[in-house]
Amino acid sequence: MNVQVYDHPSKKVLITGTSGTVKTTLLEKLLRKEKARFKFVFDHQGEFAHRFKVEPCYGPENLCEAVAAGGWVCSDPVQMYPGKTYEAFAFFCDFAFCMAQTQKGRKLFICDELQKLVDNAKTPDELMCILDTGRRYQMDFFGISQAPNLIHNAIRNQLTRVYTFRQSDKNAIKYLSENGFDENQVRNLKGHDYLWRDLSTGENNFGVATVQSDVARDSSPGPAGERAAVETNS
Image (cartoon, rainbow, N blue to C red; front, side):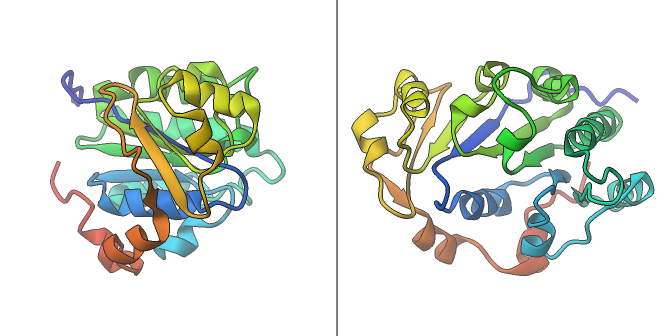
């Protein structure tokens, strides 16, 4: 069965900001709006299953059952790969990409704290398969990293949109500045305020937005609110 789609508009999103900003809350807000048949989440922090009230998967059998059901496929690596998070991430990337090649419909690949799984010197080949060729299989990417310079430039070069909270690290700010953000504005963001810029079109919100008010207005709690954002057809 050929599930390739050659006109899928690629969407690869990074959320970044210093520790203590509400990056994961913004990601939650964005994901609740995204329609997709499958949402593959590498939950190495154990947070997404709790936030979205979905059952985590602890092994290949659970993962296959979740794919058969559709919707969230949330991998918690603690049991299958105890103490080997990097290996667990590579496995899940490979699993998600293989499923994307056999299942119709849009898919999302999602990961928090990306800098703990890749760095600026290496990144798993399995993740690069998703980033390099996932578009053919309608697979998009959403990730979080405290600073963009902490992840490999092979990932950064693929990004289509960046959301940033306050940054103070000069290397993080240099990357953002080179991609159209105002250095002083990034340094002086307060609390839950953030900026975003589409790196493909130049569209931006440089008037500043605030997560707290956005989440209160746009998200609904629990799986009922999420169900509306899952495609039911292929």
